[in-house]
Length: 343
Ligand code: ADP
Ligand code: MG
Image 1: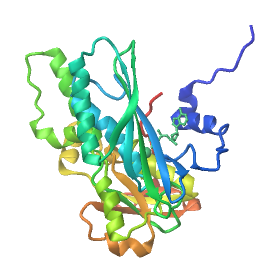
Image 2: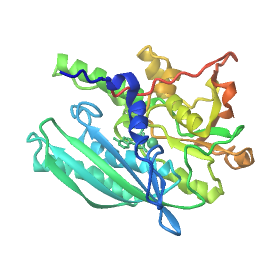
Image 3: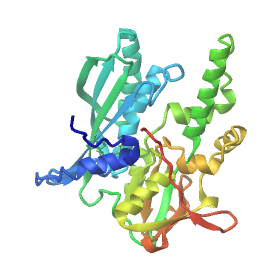
Image 4: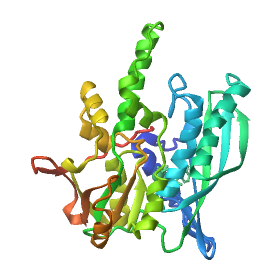
């Protein structure tokens, strides 16, 4: 028997695997402006660029139906795709939905899922235009593909950051991860004592961040209103540090991020402390916040400096200066990215 080399996916990681596969698929069609490697693919339609992206959510990996209501799941499956369109500075237009259903799911359950899908379609102004439905032997699978568009001069890639550009993030970070810890704890307590009612009242914000993340289309519209063109952009699905690394890698730069600038909501901070986890680590590595991380040129600083929901957290620097994290006490340490490990 021949001994073929076997590499575990965990050895190279999810991104390593995608890089390795992508190497063999250089785009050949002249309309393909951007293939694998950004938040969406980009196609040249003449006057505008067409954007497309896909995200798959698997029961037991990405969600747990014991605390994720089906309408929320439907909403989230759409929102995470719209978030990738937003990350290109684009406007979403259509979605398709692929479902894998085990016989555990009734018609009413699927309708509940679609309630959430509908509410996201209405909120983000997208049409559900198709999909596919199959049976599944292991729970629920939902995969959404979103289409969108962007004017050619407004598209924001991961690779456009310049040295000394300002690094900004919208909203606040770490809440979704902290919310997940709360939900997991309540589930464990419920399993041990099913008569117990979950105590979620004082965790409403963080739990909401986990169960119903919103795509920041409001910010994309504001960029247009304020005349801001991000030089690079990505959405925060894996965690701030990991996303900042993508901007660095693709733009050929380093970055400096300041601890005292990290936007962390009071409830996220306090709940993290309650779980004895470092709130900074939740913000840097938690993931699933679906905020936008972007860079702007120094000239655009005036336009965002008083914006209540856009925070400047650092700046891009030469790659020789590395990726650094400046602590509250002004110590400069190496920025670490753990991200989500799927393998
Ligand atoms: P995001 O977190 O923004 O959704 P991902 O990290 O999932 O992005 O994907 C990064 C890039 O790799 C994207 O361009 C995506 O389309 C591509 N990609 C992911 N999985 C595959 C795959 N199995 N085959 C081809 N391309 C893939
Ligand atoms: Mg993304």
